[in-house]
Amino acid sequence: MDTVRKSLFVSLRKLNQLSTVSRCVGTQTKPHQQEDPISDVRSFQARDTMVYRTRNPQPKPDRDTLSFGTAFTDHMLTVEWEGNWSTPVISPLKNLSLHPAAKTLQYCTQVFEGMKAFRGYDDKVRLFRPMDNMDRMVRSAERAGLPTFDPVELLGCVMKLLSVDKSWVPRATPDLPYSVYLRPTMIGTEPALGIDKPSSCLLYVIAGPAGPYFKSGMKPVSLLADPKYVRAWPGGSGMHKMGSNYAPTIQVQKAALQAGCQQVLWLHGDEEEITEAGTMNLFLYWVNPDGEKELVTAPLNGLILPGVTRQSVMDIANQWDEFKVTERSITMKELLDGIKENRVIEMFGSGTAVSICPVGKIKYSGQWYNVSDQQELATRLFGHLTAIQYGECPSDWTVEVD
Image 1 (cartoon, helix red, strand yellow):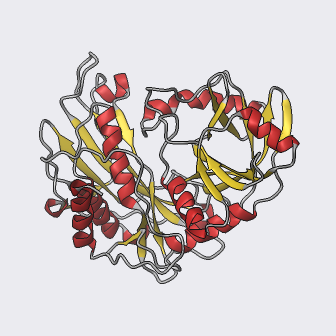
Image 2 (cartoon, one colour; image 1 turned 120 degrees about the vertical axis):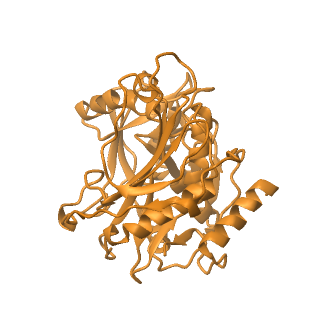
């Protein structure tokens, strides 16, 4: 761990008075195998945040009708940039005003993040591995030509926003894991045509209560695998979280639905490497050709998003030390051979919104393949993750919100 990384984590611990003691198996963070983000030394400061509370708080939505991304809390965080960062402001949620030529509208100069806050059974509100999201957003911003910032300071601002809207974090039950979903976003606002770095930007964070992804329990999804559709390619931006990576997938998702599937299995190249499923990272739990039980997922080679849940699954599985855990490319042919030879035990996706999602069937070249009817490992991992997120399992992966 280099000096920059050490200083970031020291600052974070000072900010939130974190304990680094973990009493739960599978909660020690492994170093990421990627470069540390470059933060802007002129970053905004969380301690300077100005707070203007709403005089007209909105009624909370009924928990039983909560869906993803349709309800929002009373406040938002905004920080403007025009060569230098302005003072962070927390104010009532409002619409944005943009010029029609704004860079974000013309050239998709935009990045975002997705993260969750959980109200534990002890009534404490926690964020889950938030520095991973902050670091990833800095990397995405740099790739998109947007200004960078100190990720620790953005986390401090996010925690202040959560503190203001703490009452919006729903109470969970063991069967219904409610949360608040946070969407940090940065857009280029300069009103000028021409492809160039924007001279003005807006960083903002909105939040909203979210119900469980599976209201009736985890159910396997079906995937359409069609090599004519490609999500990412070498040298591209597939490893970053930016809107330009998602818009081209919407029509493909429609094609999957028309084919009787729920999500897309993204393949790449002549070898048809398996990369992601929908917006999820993908895991295959099988007996490999060498006769070993193995949990395998695609490597961080630029074709997939370095998911926070993905990293957590690998960290937990490595500490369980019950089977081999591998990051490597796996092809559609290898998967089909495994299915035909009854070596596939389970397949599942992972992501912030869904947590863990089993895969039941794949449609490939017009033919259906039954992947597995088991989800024992997926269910076990889901239970372990939620135990950490809701405070049942003490962990240095979580950050308490005052």
